[in-house]
Structures are given as structure tokens and as C-alpha cells.
Length: 392
Image 1 (cartoon, rainbow, N blue to C red):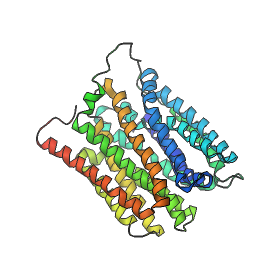
Image 2 (image 1 turned 135 degrees about the vertical axis):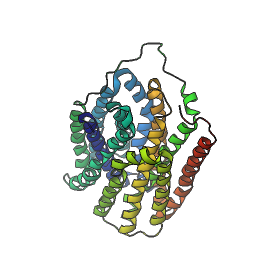
Image 3 (image 1 turned 90 degrees about the vertical axis):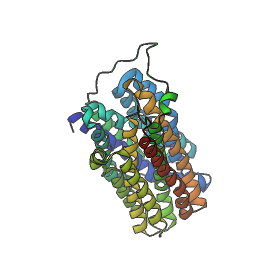
Image 4 (image 1 turned 60 degrees about the horizontal axis):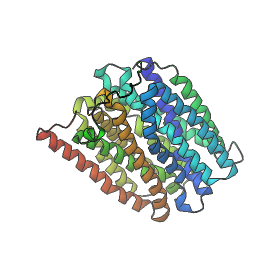
């Protein structure tokens, strides 16, 4: 851990603060404004759809201007879109709220690359630990996000409008921290300069395929259940303070393991740690199906968070073995597009399923996806045993 990596981890924590507040309140604000109940999570969906649509643009801004300028632009967009969300809440404009969260997706697509920027701030031997430590910054979001949403809920006449305004301040603090980081010097590619192998060739590697499946589908299951949790808990008669508590511990489960996930990957290998992530996501579903009291929600979401961490850190680490330095923007952009597209689908599905089919069927529908991730890991392990090339 050096000063620059520490500041990047702080930026990650403030990014997660933004995300946790959005998750905690967007579904509830959407439920109060939406023309129909099943549309409640469209503001959550808008955020990840905006992220998916922005991945190509972000890859180009990173290639042209480098990490720092692109990240700073993302934070300016974050502040502006949060202010627009507050205005939409005050004016009771559901579709403006959805549009504002789509715009905020540009920030999300930028900040999703913080974890890839971490290894560039340390020696190559510490790559796994750098990824893990940057993600560990999310612990800031675990504490600040839910408490910020609760503390600002009723500060203004319109519920949660002040929470959106607080996110403007969060973005500005992150912008100040990011300005102190010194990334490696960036040189924009010359016109006609080579950028390595075509993405299609990179994507044909088994390790690349499995990295995408694990990161995207592992995130998808986590997002499906997490986005639906505040609505499910409200429908079960539990107060918002309980939902905030569950989200706080869930985000801790997501990011506290990052202090040692890199060490575990270094010692036991990427695939075994990812396999544990699959088992933990399956355990989450089993606990969620056992009841709808506060304790079941709490244990299920903590387990879900740890399982996501092992899959996401493992998938990110696995992806970094599949491309050369000149290919990083296209490879990282491909992973983030797949992650955001999956999140968009699951964000929308979570609201539709939990309001029409209920919490039980939402969890049952997640089981085949978890099984598919497990099958992908077994396939890659089989490829490696047969001696076929699985990485770059």
C-alpha cells in the first residue's frame, strides 16, 4: 500500500457510497413515483444501463486522455447527475429520475476501472493484492452509504431529495482525492498505431470467457438479490432502518474480504477461490429461502457479499492474465460492458420479479445462474488439466 494506491482505494469507497445510496433509495423513490409498481427499480436499471452504454466511450477517453483525466470527467458527471436526481425527486418526475441515473452511468463505467488502475500503481508482483486493496476501499461505502441515506432521508420536505444532494458533495470530495494521485505517464496512441490483437481473438481464450462469466453472472446474482432487498423487506413489514442495516452489512461482506482475497488467490490459486464464491452465493439463496425475518435477510446478504467478492476479485485477476498492455482498454471495456449489461437486466428483473412473483421465486430463479458459473469454472479447470493454453 502506497499513498497513491490508498487514495485510489478512498475513491473506490466514495464510488461505493454513491452506489449504496442509489441502491438504498432509488427503488423506494421509484416505487413512490412509478406509474406501475413493477417499474419501481427502473431508476436502478437506468444507472447500470447508462454504465453499459458508456463502456465504449470510457475506453476511448481512457485511451486518449489517460486514467486520471477520464476518472475526473466521470466525477464531474457524477455531481451533475446527482443534482438532477434531486430535482427529479422534488418535481416528482419519474422519467427524469430514470434519465438522470442513465447519465450517472458514465461515472459508474469510469469508476469500475479503478480496480484495473490499482496494479499500475505498484510493482507487478503485487498485482493481485493491489486489485484486492482497491476494492477494499468499498468498506467506506458500507458505513457511509446506508447511514447517509438514513440521515438525509427527511432533511427536506421531499423524502430522499437531500440524499441525492449529499452525493454531489461525495463526488466533489472524490474529485479532490483523485487529483492527488500520480498515475504512470500516459501517451495517447498515434493514428494508425497498433493496439494488439483483435478483441475477437482475445475473447476466444478459455480464461477470458470464464473471467467474464464469473464476474458478470456473479455480479448479476448479487445485484438481482441486493436491488430487490429493500422492496422485499418493506413488503414483509420491516422498517427502512432494518433495510439500511442489512445493506450496510452486505457491503461490508462485499469488501472486508478484499483485505485478504489477494493473499488467498496468491496462495491457493484463482479458480479455487472463485469456486468458494460460487458455494457462498448458493448458501445465500438457501438462507434467503429459509424465512423472511431480519436475521435471514442479514445472514443471506452478508454471505452474498462475500461470495461476490471472491468471484469478482478472482474474475478480474483472471482477466489480467489474458491481455497485453496495448490491449488493456478493449479487454477491460469488454468485461465492464458484460458486467453492466448483466446488471441492467437483473436490476429491472429484480423489481419486476419481487413485486409480481415474490422473494421466494426471485431466489429460486438465481440458482441456475449460480450453477452455470460453477460449470464454467469446472470447464476451465478441465482445459488446464488437458494442457491447452488458457491464458495469454
